[in-house]
Structures are given as structure tokens and as C-alpha cells.
Image (cartoon, rainbow, N blue to C red; front, side, top):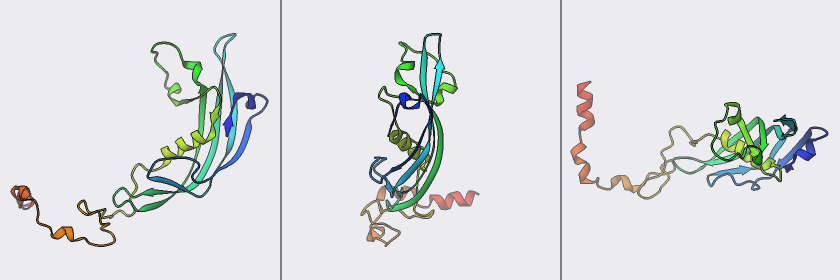
Length: 185
């Protein structure tokens, strides 16, 4: 859904959209399972910069919810992650702040997003908000054993025979170090 300032001139735009699974590309380890309903309202905020210049900002307020699967950071099994959230964001046309050269910005300006001349894509905003809301690292269980670094066996499902392989002789110099450290404490 594309939101343009022209749609918002007379009144706010209320929307109730459903983004189907597979419509948005999040990341290789994140999968949306089922529909993602998004409902909210878009308003036009006109910023008067001078007597003859103004900027059409779009304020977007919405909420969303969906179920996702994220791969476990250790064993790469899918983990169900239900997600819901809401946002209240302001977007400005890209050209409005395209001054030549560098300039400092205010703290309030760090909270402003930008939209292209064609308009603001609701799907792009929702994708970004979902990615910001998901945990940075997901584990299937707190004590996940992960994958064997040698053979790739999921150690939560079965033990592999790699444990019986001889240790690298270069590590022998560190053998018994843990016992020595415990004696000093």
C-alpha cells in the first residue's frame, strides 16, 4: 500500500491491511508464518519553513501482529516467535532535507524517516518495524547444545561419534589449567 500526501489533504487515511506470508523478505533466518494484519491511520503534517515553503510530513500510527519462525542461533531449528507491536512515526520527503554539504541535526530529527517522491510504502515501514522488534538472538531452549562443529549433528537430538576423536595435541599444554586455577581460589 502506497501512502501519498495527496491522499491525506482532506482527512486522515485509516487503513486495515493484511500482509500475506511470503510477501515481505525479512532475512534468510526469519520467516513470517501466516498473515500479518496491520491497522492504523496516516495523517498529513504540514511544516511551514517560510512564508512560501512548506514540507508535507506523513505521520503513521499503526499496530501489527503475526507469527514468525526464527532459526535457533545454535542448532538452526525453527523457533516460533509470536510478535505484536505498534509504532508512531513521522516521515518527510527525501528532497526536503537534501541540502548540499554537511549539517548538524537536532535530536528530534533523528526520529524522522524519509519517503520517496512516489510516496510512503506501508510494507517497507512494517518490515523495518518487525525487524527492529524481533530479538537479536533466538535460542530454541536456554540449554540448547547446538551443532557438532565437526560433523554438523544436532546435539539436542543425538550424540555424535566426534566426541571420541582424539584431541589436538597442541592443546595438551593447557591440560590441567582449570584445576590449577581452582586450587588458588
